[in-house]
Image (cartoon, rainbow, N blue to C red; front, side, top):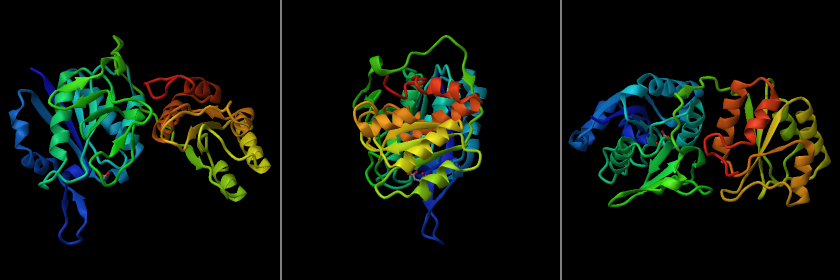
Length: 333
Ligand code: ASP
């Protein structure tokens, strides 16, 4: 019999209005279950495990580790996993899990909702029910996000809408599947399962930072980021195809950081397209000081990949080598 494990972590899907404060607060999964009698209609065995439910703004790497451990420990008993999670940091969690779980051979589908499951117009039921179908079908051995009829590769996804039901977008990679009357899988886009055993990478090194360039950024701003104690890598969020100002102090600071062994990874502030530091002088200069291309990575995936690689390797050279590879389909190269 097909069996599915739902891992409940909180998020709007399981929230209710707290009459005292008027704010939404996470509730237990039993209350979520009561709102979805449809769960009993599945012909699959559905088990649930609940973490202490939180707003996903509270998510930290130790929660990723808890989720990854649950998946690894119960891996042989289930055909697929559904992770109920708040939307705010869902793209970060999906990216992190994609790196932490190597040789994944079963679906790990993250979903949630914009409206609590107890509300009449909720998008939560639809999302949860289809996510279970997708996890049970077993076609997609990846960490993915199902939201508003689209199955997206998790490490290609960003939350981009706080209002509409279509909260997520994967602008640099097409959906892996679409749910209409049928669920249509795009097999040519889906990563192939390997014969190798699942391997968990528990260590995520959080000595990373994001430096977003903007007109008017000051030397003090850049200096303060690059001099953070223990810092090992920086995601540089640049303009367009990977461009940044040629201010001499800025280039000197970057050059000094690279000399000290910091890894600088260039991702674009644009949602679509990719970093190509050869196109403009404003990009070439970055390449010359030793900034590495993040290709068409999202910032979420770039951060997660850096934490994962820094957790694995002490040596910046090894980290840089693997940054240039697509490890879980996170970049197009
Ligand atoms: N603040 C909520 C969370 O991320 C938002 C949501 O789930 O849609 O937990």
